[in-house]
Each structure stands twice: as structure tokens, then as C-alpha cells.
Amino acid sequence: MLEGLSVARAGPEDFEDAAAFYRSVDRDLDRVASCDTILLARLAGDVVGAVALCFAERHLVLRTMVVREGLRGSGIGGALLDRCVEEIAARSCWLLGFGDLIAFYSRVGFAVVPEEEAPGPLRRRLAAYREHEPPGHSDSRGGFVVMRRPAADEA
Ligand SMILES: CC(C)(COP(=O)(O)OP(=O)(O)OC[C@H]1O[C@@H](n2cnc3c(N)ncnc32)[C@H](O)[C@@H]1OP(=O)(O)O)[C@@H](O)C(=O)NCCC(=O)NCCS
Image (cartoon, rainbow, N blue to C red; front, top):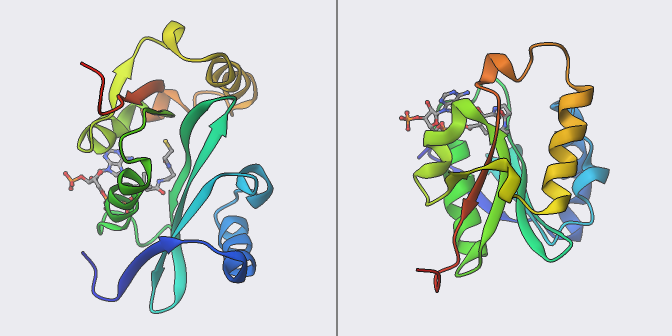
């Protein structure tokens, strides 16, 4: 892990930094502002990555995992994911991801699930992504995949 990297839950005092980070990576904080949990990775105080855990109806969903360009590939995403799994704890959790990140998410117990098995809110979001994405964008990332981390008490 990078020296000086910290990952922590965002509190009200982090709002401005989080909003500035999301803007800098072309994401919109409003989309995750109502989320249960936002985790921020900071390096020397600067926000360099974020991920959110949200409820979609009654389903817990990991959303908007992003690391600042130029710092990717140095373990920040992995550190955010490890912290996310601590927050998820024994609960089941879903995500919509890119196919090129299957190994990234599998490391902490997510597995690909047929998209017909995804809860309604995820299927609707997947349909919206497909409708609005730039042509060929997800193809270059291995398509979209639905993944789920089972609850601890599932067989
Ligand atoms: C995905 C992302 C958050 C990963 O963060 P990161 O800091 O680069 O991740 P790490 O450095 O911890 O890398 C973890 C592993 O995932 C792999 N990985 C990361 N991005 C990858 C990609 N696009 N394709 C294939 N493998 C990838 C790394 O090679 C690394 O593998 P290794 O442990 O075998 O070396 C970051 O690349 C990012 O912000 N990408 C753009 C936004 C995005 O795609 N978000 C995810 C939406 S589902």
C-alpha cells in the first residue's frame, strides 16, 4: 500500500473535498450523496479515490468506485475495496461493474451473477447505462457485469 494512504468514511466535514474529487473525475456527488456510506481514500490529505455503498430499495449496492487518473494501479482501489468489505460485513452486496474488473472484485468475494438474477433497481440502471453510454465504451472494458458478494450466512 502507498505510504501515507488512508481510507475512511466521509463525514459532513469531508463534503467539499468529496464534491471536488467527484467533479475532478467527471462524476456527480449528487448521485451518491444519499448513499449510506461514502469511503474516501486520501494521500497526504488529498482525496485520491472514492467508493459508495448505497441501498437500492432493500439491496446493498457498491457504487462509483473511482481512483484519480495517474494514481491508478498503485493499490488505492484495492485499499478502498478492502475497507468496503469491512463496511459490508456479513451482508449481501451487489455491484454493476466492467468485465475487465472481474478479478479485481473477485478477490474480496464478489462473483458474476446472470443479469436476470439482479434486483430490479440494478437491472434498470444497467438498461440506462447501455442506453446512454458512448458507442462501444463498455465493449472496450469487457462489457457490463452484475456481481454479488453473498451474505455470510448463505450456503
Ligand atoms: C477500477 C479502479 C477503481 C481500480 O483502482 P486502482 O487503484 O487502479 O486499483 P489497484 O491498483 O488496487 O489495482 C487492483 C488490481 O486490479 C487491476 N485492475 C485495475 N483496473 C483494471 C482494469 N481496468 N483492467 C484490468 N485490471 C485492472 C490492477 O491491475 C490490479 O491487479 P493486480 O493486483 O493483479 O496488480 C481504477 O482503475 C479506476 O478508477 N478506474 C476508472 C473508473 C472505473 O472503471 N471504476 C470501476 C467501475 S466498475
